[in-house]
Image: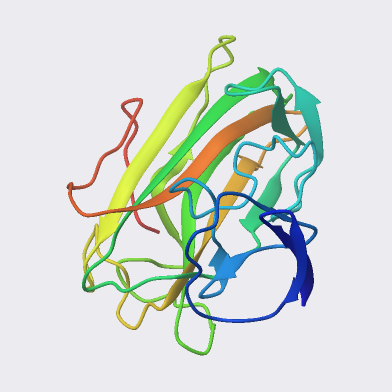
Length: 220
C-alpha cells in the first residue's frame, strides 16, 4: 500500500471501509474510491485545475503554463491533439446526472484554424468503448465543432448527461464508466494554441442539458 499519515501516525494502508475521528490525512500516494480519485471536493477528475503544475491525470497535454483561469496554472496544447483523462469514472446511468465543465482560451490562431470537441468516451463493464446512439464515434455532448474566438477571453463550455437511452442527453445503453475527451485545435495547422483550465466533472441530481457560448451541441 501507500504511506499515509493519519493524526501524525504513519500507516502503510491498502484497505476498504470507513474511517472516523480523522482530522487530517497526508499521503505519498493516491486515495481512490471505486476506481477514481476521492478528492476533497466534488470534482471527479484528478488535476482538472492543473495546480500540480504537471499533466498528471491526463494524456497528450503538451505543457503546463502560468496564467490559468483559476489558480496559477493551466494546460496548453499546440496543434491538433486528442486529450483524454486517465481515470475510468464509474457511472450509474439510472441515477447519475453528470455535469461536465471546462474553460478554454485560444492564444494563437493557426494558419488553418481548428475547432473544439469536448465530451467523453462511454465504456461498458469490460471498459470497452461504446459507440452506439446517442453517440457515434464518441460523445461530444459539451462542444461539437466549436470555434473558440481568439479574443483574450476565457470561454466556459458545460453540459449535463443523465439517463440511459439513445437520445441526448442520455448515456449510451450499458454505460458503466466515462473518461473525459477533448479534441483540441481539431484539423488546425500552423501552431494553433489553446489553454484549458478548471475542468470539472461533477455528480449532481438535477438539471436538463446545458450548453454555453451559443454553439450547436451535437452528439457525434
